[in-house]
Length: 164
Image 1: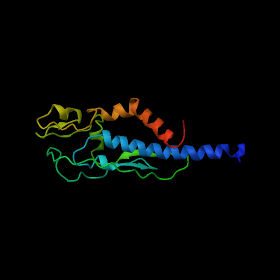
Image 2: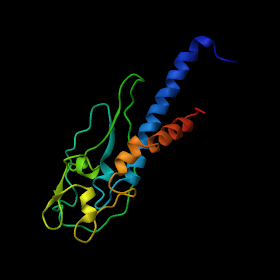
Image 3: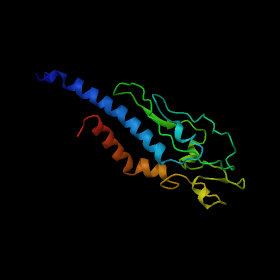
Image 4: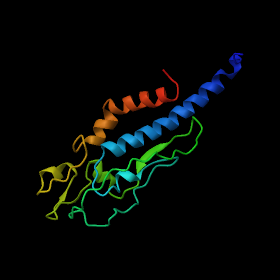
């Protein structure tokens, strides 16, 4: 038997909440896959929260940034997303202390192999080994968030929960 029309808004809100939750998981997965990867600390620290995410986690292994540790394999985790009503904001952020550097944010620098403070983009121009490991280059984060890639993830996430 069909549901009464009075349940439409309630049912629609439930589906939208599911879509919001799926979208947060999808965004975390994509940011982990597309972002820079050496030790895994940055990739493993994408989280979803009800509050803005603060960059507080140290790099593991805790080496200086002008020392290049061996690359690790990527571990893509299924992000935990807090349950929240439709009208509550959710934040996707990275807890690594050097997150601003890794997304190539203006003014964010770390030392290169010579000790000179450089941005993430400038690392590719530095002494070998070249240290850019993001798949789409130094502006990978802007390409994802300001280009159509995040729009593809929005569409994919909502389709996954039943929207067409």
